[in-house]
Amino acid sequence: VGAVRKDSDSGYPPQGAVSFKRGSRGMYEDLKGKTALVAAAARRRGLGFAIARALARQGAAVCLADRDAEVLERARELEAEGAVACGVVADIRSDGATETLRATFAARHPRLDILILCVGRMHGQGRVAELSPEAWQETQEVNLFGAFRMLHAFLPLMRDKGGSVIALASGAGKRPLPGFSGYSVSKAGLIMLLKCVAVEYAACGVRANAICPGPVESDMVEERIAAEAASAGVPPDER
Image: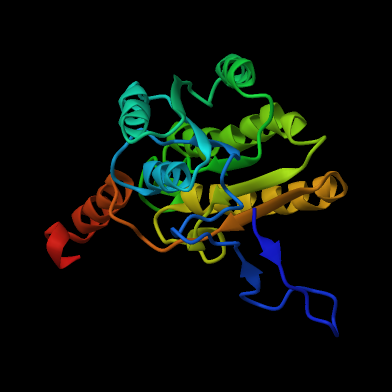
């Protein structure tokens, strides 16, 4: 969605070289008229809804998806601000639900320009041999396989005209987070999955990037802090 300035010697964009065409009123003109889908956008706290709102305020039409029905209220909030928005309840752990999400989206929008994957869950805390296999697998099901299902369903909508895929990974995918092996492995897999998409779909004009934000104020981060505090036997605010 941005214009990339290339280094004349290497042919590659130098670090920090992405620039956006900004209008007189602060709107990123590159985003105006774009269509975006943001997965995991039901909670007011956290990054999903914040990203959806930022896109909407820059003139993009936004579809918010989440397994929590609160996503419908979040979409109405954006509509009340004058945005073009819709909400869809969908559980990306299900192949059928993901395909239904795609059909619902395609019925409203002729194309998809931006796909944002904000899904993240932490199930279980402890060393590898202490964890429940079911909880470990559930983390992969949401964080990794859920992302794969979304890509499998929505990349065909980008194949003709290109677009941008952004997934929220984590520093835990690059450096293990003790006690959360399932989460660390799922985010490492997500980073590699986005690299695969970038290589396989570059010729179609699709860009794919995984970004690793630090901790933000969200329910998941608070749950992690509480789990770590309980394991250490200290109050959460002393963790």
